[in-house]
Image (cartoon, rainbow, N blue to C red; front, side, top):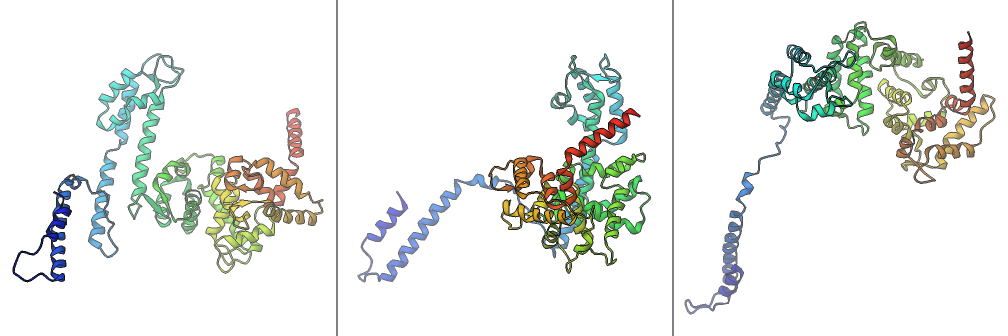
Length: 453
């Protein structure tokens, strides 16, 4: 019988005790006692039907508070032990050499040029002999991933070995970066990455010539590239997974090559010549030698043809100290202007162009910036170009979803973001765009003259 019905009947039953009737308060107390009794029995019975909830494993562990020193130490030690165990699971140099020996021994003829190949049967044989650490690499899906157009159904031994080397390197690097993850949450803060790169410098032969007094500036220069591109929301931390997925770490570790070409050094942001170039530019712009850049000093950047309107926006939106820019903020500025095709750089410039903070550029904002270009053209004795013509060209290039507004995503998707932003902020860039056909023709003539000689 339902407990509510029992309760209702019990209350309705007349008092058969002594002659006196129970007071209204006593009846209410009895009602509450009965309610509590039957409700407790009902709830207890329901609880018994859900015993399996007790078997759900714990999935959340609270991080130790700052004052829980013992728990913090325990957590640090357990992480260190875990990373050491993971490190021991990786192939060492001797095991990699043994793997190459086994692959070479079991190659399947005929060779393609000088490239040794191996079929699936021999691939499995090598997997059995290579040891337990290699087992993960000898799966059918790995073989299928590396199988391309070989008519005998084989894969390249060199490609497979490079695949293994890459996997081992990624795991080694992940473990190395995790050692600097103080929070133990899978990301690095700016100070964590600074410590990692500072301790990496002595292992990079291409940085042997750097003065120790320059180390702090080099580390700042290197770290800034990671955070500019991998932390667009400026949270102050980057996922280790994102660091491994991008190519920046490859560029940094390329400096281990003692015979790195001059051309590669010049194009590598992390090389000594590149870092010295950027820092040298900063020092040259700093005319009053106070370690900061004013708007007037920054105006001499590059070809010194950026508009005052754009520079005003830089100092309005970017972090400054008493109206002057420090080296870290300058690095963001340089990274944005030197990488205008990249989404992160376009996001930086777009924020400056979006004067009304509406999330899009309209005719008003385009005209606001292009008027400054027209004024510079007059100063340099050039006939100003019609804004209407430039506006139509910009919208034709970008082809925005809304014909009256250009969003950041429109700029990125059009692959013309670098051209559009250059037209609006830099007279020299606009002149180059306007005269592109004449410049191409001139280059072709020069090439023809060189061929004739």
